[in-house]
Every structure is written in C-alpha cells, then in structure tokens.
Amino acid sequence: MTTLATLALVGSGLGVAVTATLAAVFIRDPTKGMVQTTHHMEQLPQVMTGRYVALTALALGATFYGNMAVIAFLFAVFAFLGFADATIYSRAGRPAFKHLIAGCTALVVTVLAIAAIYQTGAPI
Image 1 (cartoon, helix red, strand yellow):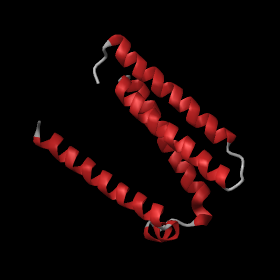
Image 2: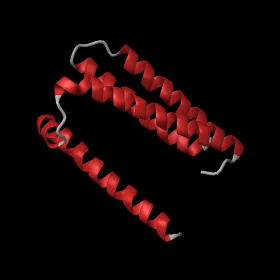
Image 3: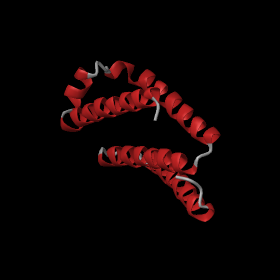
Image 4: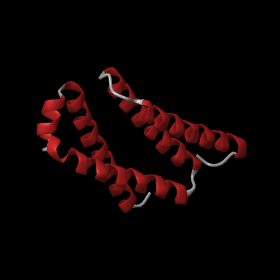
C-alpha cells in the first residue's frame, strides 16, 4: 500500500471515529447532539436538502463504479435510514409509509446486489 493510500485510510478511519462519536451523542441526548454539532431546528429543511443531494451523489457514484459489494453496502445503509425514519415517525404517531417503502426498496437493491455477487462470483 502506498503512503498516500495509507494516509487516505487513516483519514477515513478518523472520519468514522468522529461520525460514530457524534452518533453516540445524538443517541444519548439529541438536544446535546444538536448543540455540539451546532445544528438548529430552523435550518433543518436546508440541512436535509444537503443530505439528500449527498445521498444521491453517493448512489450515483456507486452505480457508475458498478461494484456490487459497494452497491450492496450503500443500499443496506439506505435501507437502515428508511427503516429508522419509519420507526421514529410511527412511534410519534405520524405517517411512516413512505419511509417504510424507501427502506424496503433499498433492501431489494441490497439483496439483488448480494445475489449478483454470489451468482457471478464478482469480486467483493
């Protein structure tokens, strides 16, 4: 592995650690998480816009790259997001069907990508 690749992996690992730490803060105390990340409820719609653009870019990149393992992993994460949102909204007594459908649709893509890996012996 080259020095640059090693540095990229270290940077990626640090990004994982920071993101996981923030996730843990939000899990324990969402209000503290909002303060610590300097997010504000008033700007949440704009923040969500950025998130959806970023998720679209990730899906587009995975699709163009064409690696079934990358697609399976990414869409498994998308399925988790859909199911997590559906659970949150359902528990709050709000409509959750669109999030449930999004989770199921992403799960179908995940299963298809995994099946393609096994069917073709594609590299993981």
